[in-house]
Length: 103
Image (cartoon, rainbow, N blue to C red):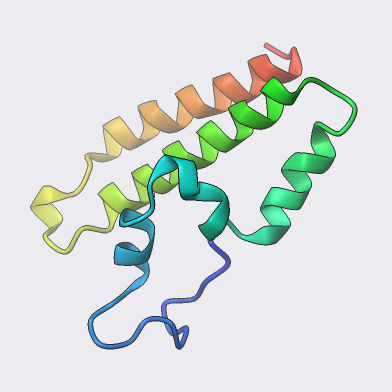
């Protein structure tokens, strides 16, 4: 959803999968794996505003990808607990709303 890639993409062969693709990316490389349409929307949203809003959006994308990686580990018992996922997603939502000036 965040990368614009499908699990069946030709990129994912020989044991390399979407989980590995996202996990291997460092936060400063996030723009390289985020769906270009999401990046364009984020840039358009802040075109006439502070650059800090774009940075907040990118930080939120990093957090969402990190959550996706934690929820998709191979072993179910090693996955992030749903209660923690919900807490983290609410924090992300609140950060985005604050960056828009909405509470």
